[in-house]
Image (cartoon, rainbow, N blue to C red; front, side, top):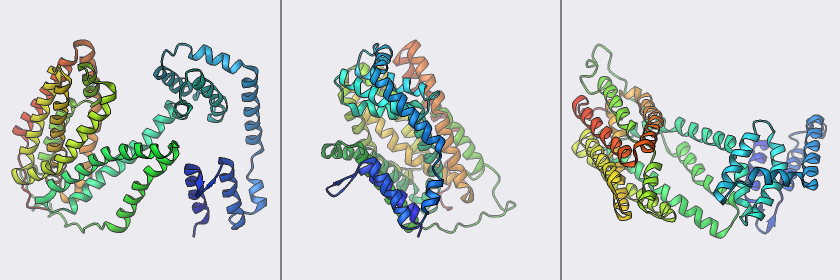
Length: 438
């Protein structure tokens, strides 16, 4: 049994929840309990523990605390805060100044220094601006380098899991049911996007401690990992026929068609910019800022409700036909966003836009599985997701430039035009493959 790892996990859990029953624990009490636990269980001896203490680090931390306390007691720290944050005209402006100000400072100062100096500073600013100190403390904790690192790790994890997950789904599903299964997967993903924030909001009604909410958010991930490890078993794949017996490239809807499909997908994604532009358009037309989260939740509800149907439709009428229908709906939705003038029109268009996702997300993945060789599905899904992700940046830059110089109608109209061009390319250059092979 790996006792140090168990103790470490227990310490992290206690730091997150800070209580066991009616007992409340402080941060230093939890860390002390962890240290005592490894000493009592004999994982490390007292002499080794003392030898692990670095005097230089202790001296550095002592200096940091002394300087930080001196700045606070002298009033000079608050004078600096007045000079730095007096231009913040609103709560949002103050949060942005803290995020970017301390983010830039972290390039020159260590995090310990920023924590000691920044904490009393943001508490004073919260009092002056009559804001909840938790909001500003979170802004201090997630200054942009830390936020960038967290987001980078999060996206790296998603990139590592997404393609193997889709290949696993494809390998474990009969070809004539792949659309339905991928559609159901997307439906559950979108349902989680609605249920997750609602459950988090419910948790915040019970406790105002955000650490509890984050700890609870880890529970579904742990359950999913347990289900993957103990409940999912990979099928043994059939080997591909020898090269001499295989059909010529591109004639059976395999490698050549997959390349053509990915090229057409890149063209479509160039016009499929960030959905933040659609939310911005909703605000321009007159949708209240407070209603934006409700509008976004409604959009996900449509996707969750219709995604299984979209995937099943591709099993019946073909992947290409369903994707063409979805891209056509996308072009109409973007054209509608360009011309919309009322909040009601925006709500209806978000419903239509949700149907686009339902008609394409499952079928697009099933199409990749149909086109790729059995032994190369992981690579094929990797290319599929790489192209989708890489093209999102130039797509958003293009939309932003067009929006800034020519207005929303031109920017969104360009997205509709690129979708129509991609649909034409899919119809002309990518044949519908046979789905009789695994």
